[in-house]
Length: 262
Image (cartoon, rainbow, N blue to C red; front, side):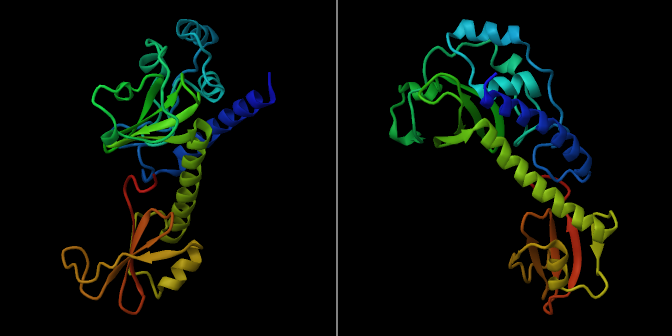
């Protein structure tokens, strides 16, 4: 076993523990894609893929799976908990198919710049295994110039997006930061999802408690949402909105119910 392979396996083993932790901490369903409309990945992982299944896939296609993805399948599972709605099941969405034609691109491609009959439209060599929402999907280059590179298929372009571990790490960092902020809010709000008119708390008091920056939403005067003279404030990486008055006194804190960390 190479040093790189060992590091990948350790990374995916560590991810299993992180998912269990996230599942416990995310009791208000604030992480996007984890529990969405009865769906989402629920921080679960699918059964691991056997060496025989991987060997059969590689023989059928004529190339080896990229190391990060192969160790993911063997150590973490066939898919499940992760960025956005999680990764699709390898057995269902990738294993039955072949990717013998290489992906021809090395950089972002804008669809308006290519002909309708260009093979890029079929994304040869890329296995799409995730949904980002709003019509965007992401997948991994299996056959091409950069095996292991992730690509995002937007409505108007196909863009490279680092490696699988880099992709996961960005998500992990966001979730860890967001859930940490959420736990700080819970300690202040005694576990409630809404705290009305905290006693004598100012915006600076709350900023000190959360230890992060904030920004003004500039929602003054929207009577259907908040009263005249009040403003909404959002704290960085914090799944909540705060209403303050013209003297910066906190009037209410509300934890978003779903999908505020993504």
